[in-house]
Length: 229
Image (cartoon, rainbow, N blue to C red; front, side, top):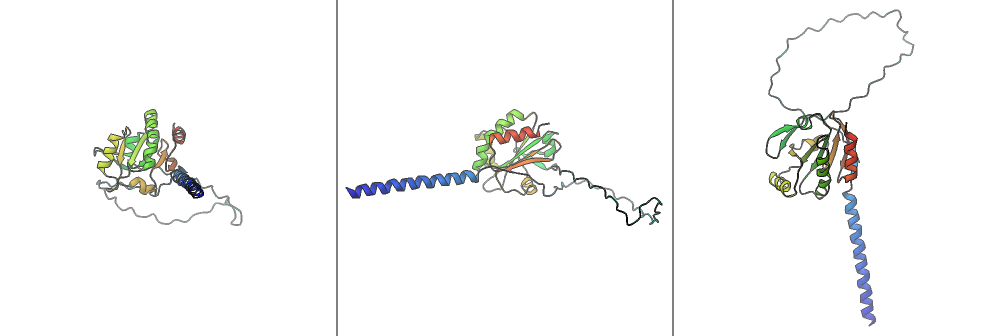
């Protein structure tokens, strides 16, 4: 009898420990997928190749050096001269990167946004937090699409994500927003390997804010409201 009671107690304790371990694992996973606000920075402008030839301009002889006459009103060398304040560097603007629609037709960042503020969501169909936040984005897309351009860039890697997998996902989800490929340009420019990654742009193309990981509906709406004209 005592042996049975002891075994029962051991079983109950083991079950409690198992529940605690599962709870800790869940909280750890939840924290790992939590959103992280960050200020995205453009690494380098992307050079778009062109086939146009630029005519070579004739060489212009350099002007001969000339003596500089110092005015009598100029301050003496030992006087302090106020240096002009350097103007802050302008915020970098998103280049007009090429984009490809799911049907293979070509467009670009500027052609899609048409002077509107922009939300870029970088995602993949196999990514759990991407799929978790997509309903928020699609709801926001339906509400703000006349005021804000939404660009969903698929992380096409040819292995986990192929054209076939993303097209099937868009059909089955269903996905109502515009999806594009960009040959990895966005991830390179913003130096991100996080899925999902979301960046918000003002109407002039400058970066306003960004998030790494899953974005809550509340944060998404606040970020969109912040870029509205």
